[in-house]
View (cartoon, one colour):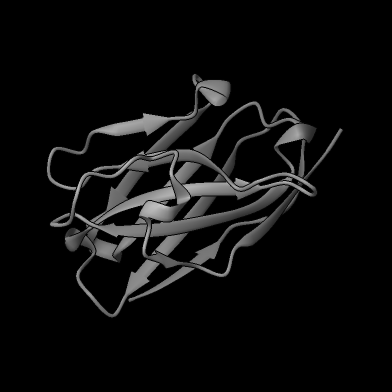
Length: 126
């Protein structure tokens, strides 16, 4: 299983950022997908997750109202949108996968996710 993030870079505060996670090697529908981020000097934290099958979504409380996550099966891709982006959203953003057939998982628990992308840097300027 391989995950590749894209869409990062330098963005202006107040805009909308779209990140993509392309999944290859195994069918996307075998996995629940999460987005995480890690700011300098901080622990990695869960941002958003999407559960395969019913499409249920989970969002970090600190960012609720500014996030959307959706799966594009035709492109084997899961996208994350962050609106009204702020300088404190600056971080490396990662996507990760957990097998939907496995045990219960928690969107906030990085250890539940088995495969990770290499990350994409997002820097928000004020």
